[in-house]
Image (cartoon, rainbow, N blue to C red; front, side, top):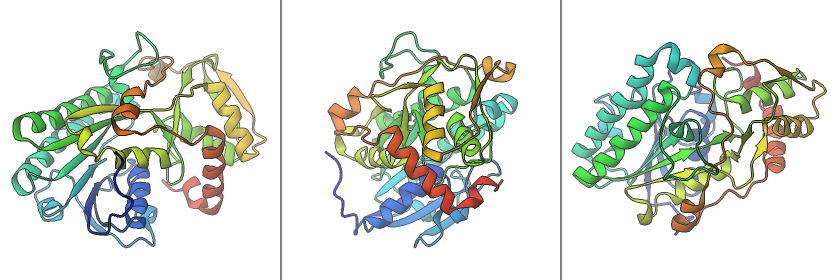
Length: 329
């Protein structure tokens, strides 16, 4: 069952809390009355920015999650939302050792800290649908083979396994969520390497032409960040302990359809154009992907409820009111 909307007696730690999803989660936790501590290394290019939590009453610890100094921040916490990590697939191929360090080594150190100072804490970890690689069947459920196509998928899968090992070996109450394409307010728009959705949204808001690789027929399911926040909260339920869940949308669209919806929501005059695949993108591309979210719906009672059109309108409204996202590096 989903957790109570009243978290007034709860202490939550959000790693990566200055980033896109983490900042939205932090805002919701505070709205529900929780005391929130953020741990974020503010690594350049990863999307973390103190402005994402401007106006929120939150404690910020600037550090890697594996640093010893985070022990004080996690001691006494009731729930850890472990969202820290590197998410660029292209960057993971350029610098695989950095990606493995951020998404695997630091998480092992972090789990050791939790085991030592707070072994009864509830932990929800975010992973990615990229762990599956190119689908051999669709929609993709949690029993689908994992065959990552890039280093980021490998490191995130290793992070999942670490969290599960610490559950089975030490009793740490962990859950991992494999997120699909997430969009919405507070997402970094200025990078071309953090997924196609922020790129499409930025170009549309600026009135630029949206470029789509290939024939535009590839399909994706997109999830509004508000729905992802609800999934993270639902994952704190006891029924989720020791489990991995997909977090996606029952509805999928082609990239051309998604781009057209973004153009409509923003009123862009830039249009869209199909272009050939760049080599660095094509070698790690997974083709069409549609998430099967049956398990999380049955076990935790969660499913995405925000339509693409509604989510995109809210997203466009947010960025028009916060123009720094369009230019900030």
